[in-house]
Length: 289
Image: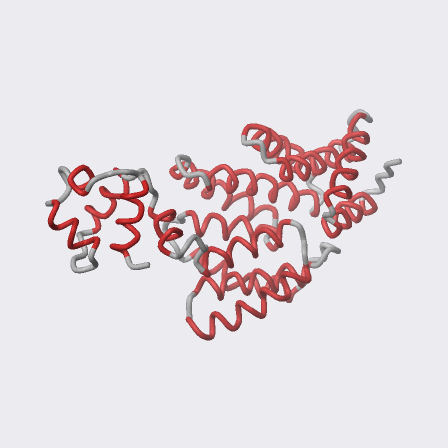
């Protein structure tokens, strides 16, 4: 649909007249021209119209695209989802798709997420840091460091490359990320991005043997996951926390936490993620019956 067609559909679906929607924003006959695709209002008036319709711009684009996510939105979502559960088969497919999309569009999003796919594939389920993995992430790291301010796209991108950074630099730049992220706390994406940052920091610290930091980051990740009812994220955060606590010599109740959450991962069919934690347990000589 065109802009005007979409606007008219939403207005009529919500039972608003042209006079009611246009009041105080633009003349009614101008709105009629907009809906007939003969006139495009200024951007400030576009957002005023959407605000009166209680529609976000992203939702408007979704409706305009016949209730289908746009390619970039779909692609970013799929990469993030499959990276979170270490689905290497799907990531390999998305890596190839990213290369084709970047070649055809020259859109930097496909370039970044293609590199991210390749880095995660190099990392694998064995959690082995390699020079090739670091090289894949290097252009993304440079892109982020060259910017004065990060927005939601950059904040999520940073969270996704944490696994390829050294602990000290990850913590250093995370301070900048959390401070900047706070400005976006009114957005729904805020809660997931904040939680994933703490979860990914705890994983990074575990992998580098910094169990005190891993415990602290995962504790915060658990609290955020509980607040926002993020079940999958809560399971991963509790596993990280329990592993860190056991390595710090704390009481044995954490073994039961690991056992229960490993059962949950197995039940939900997260095979590669289950393998990821099994390797962690083996690496740190933690046996759970």
